[in-house]
Image 1 (tube, one colour):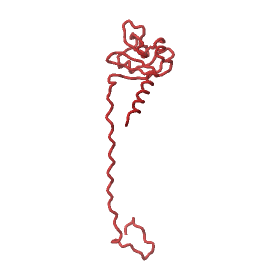
Image 2 (cartoon, helix red, strand yellow):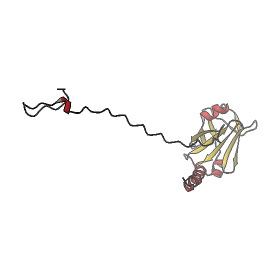
Image 3 (spheres, rainbow, N blue to C red):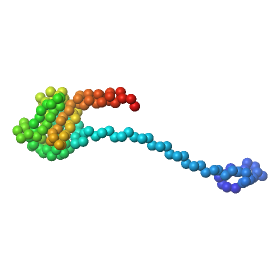
Length: 158
């Protein structure tokens, strides 16, 4: 008698091995197929680098990674302009602004006011290395763009 079989209840009871069936081997079930993932979305933002910052009380934002990617160093003179609700920053020999010693970008009060950027409010910085410029987008613009995108995504049939 094997150890894993139950003991007889009575002393004179004995199991007859020929009558006790041997358990059949159970095959492992086939693994479920993995779902097919959708193709990755087309990458239209190649060559654009992003960062998020909050302007301080003086209107400066820190963007070290973007400045490093553009090879902008402290003391570089900049031209700052407002274009379609965003702040456009480009290097200029006769620029009125400069990259700060702590690698911060100046956002002049007039430009912030025209774009509706408040102190401490997050902004999206988009560096375009091929054009050697940075665009600063206010959070309300990003919110509106994403709301439109989400509305279109949710309206599409699955």
